[in-house]
Image 1 (cartoon, helix red, strand yellow):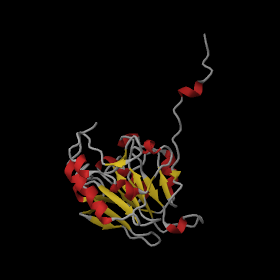
Image 2 (tube, rainbow, N blue to C red):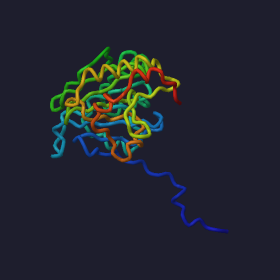
Image 3 (cartoon, one colour):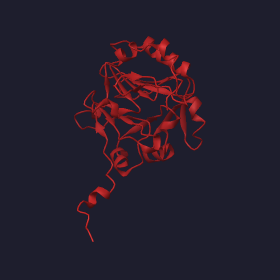
Image 4 (spheres, rainbow, N blue to C red):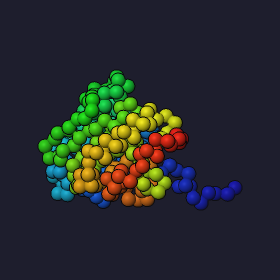
Length: 245
């Protein structure tokens, strides 16, 4: 009877801990969450705890990370004030996360009704998440992928946009809106992209943190020169695009 010399290969891999992005400071990315179809959640750390280890006055969690001990231990002692949901598909175990972290859940009003067991802070077109020690942080309704899809903008290091599934990297690492078979309204999604182009500039939108497809960033974990990616999109041609998977 032969003995397997590599038994560890049969064991499940331990969950990866959250990864601190190389830039800008104070942002962590969580490992893809199977319960949200491989989506990536993020933690925005308040300035008071960036670098010097002192206690932050308020952090923001963007979407729900996997409900694993590694993530719960990482977040347990953090002062999470807000959990911002970019769309309905990013809300796996949101009630458990709210109970665990004792935080407010912010979601666009057209998604809020889907969470009857959660105490939500709904918004219509935009909402400011105001916390001492945190740069201006603004939730923006970007309808299209779902009725209540939203992005979160952080005025840090030239501007960071947490785009959920509204804007994602493609196989080349280029930021694009992706039309899926279940996309709620493709043209409205493209209109929301145009609204972001009109609202921001290269000076106010430097980075983008996508809510999925982060493997296409080939280890970088973040998109630099984000506004240039948006400016390069041919929205007229995209209107004729066919749904993908």
